[in-house]
Amino acid sequence: MARHKKSSHKKKSSKCPEPFNTMIDLAAGLTMAAIASSKEKKHNYSARGKINPYAASAIGMATGRIKNTEDIIRTGAILGAMGSFDNDDVCDDPLLSTGSFVHTNDNRYAWRLNCEDGSDYGIFPEDYETREEYNEALHNEKYGWRDFCEDGSEYDLAPENFETEEEYEAALEEAREVAESESDDMDEDIDDMTIEVDGKEYKAGESIVIHLEDEDETQASSTPPTSNPSPVTMADADPFADDDFHVYVYCLVKLPSADEPIYYRTEDHSLHRGNQVIVPCPGSGETVTGEIVSVEHHMRFSVPVPVEETRVIIGTI
Image (cartoon, rainbow, N blue to C red; front, side, top):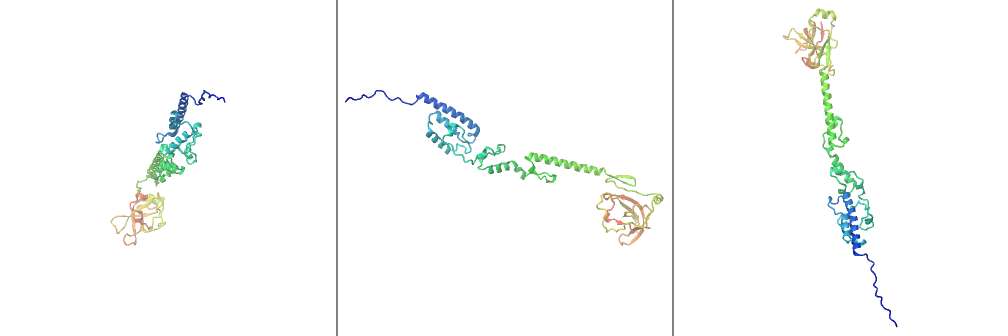
């Protein structure tokens, strides 16, 4: 039988030439390096002390260590165990989206993508597990000053209505200045206040003393009543205590049994010097007759004797 001759032709290899494979690896590595740079800007791996998984993958691809799915899975498992991947990160790269090393996103940290920025206060969402914990920490950092600031209720100011302590302090200072200015204006108004007695004006704080010298003219202008319109004793309360502008009539009365005249008060504005009046006698309480030697008009702040301590004229003769 004739033997078939073995073919001397060898089967050609389907592998690409080695230089071409190396170029493919370098191209993949450069592509992944560009992705790693973009992810570094987004997630700041270096600042947070983490390994950039994309940069590690770029090195693996460029050196030919990552060539198939098994290599990708192995590299992803190692980097995942080291905590390199962010749980809230969504992989948008088509080269990596098919790799099984990408963690399944359970949305536990999705809130970090749209939470309030707390970087100005040193508060970062990556340090908190839940949105509630993060918001509470941020609120305490932003508004903790409200628990220790000055009370502004006197000026109708509440710290809850202000975002910063500086704004609250400025509003409090302005309210304080306005209140002091209004107080000064009120004092000036009182100082400028005048009253008119018998045709003459008197300023606040100025004693009002009127001596009626001409007995004949006074009697011609008015006839004294026979008795005081509302006789009271010294023990009675001042009926004009609530009237800051009431004018009190004080009379110095000379008694037969006293060496010096004594102050008595009355509401009878027609009395004048020389009138004979009936008054209670100091000590005994009996009524006696005395002569008015002087008539004075005072407001409460200028009376020569406190109103409650001054005896009252009972009547005239």
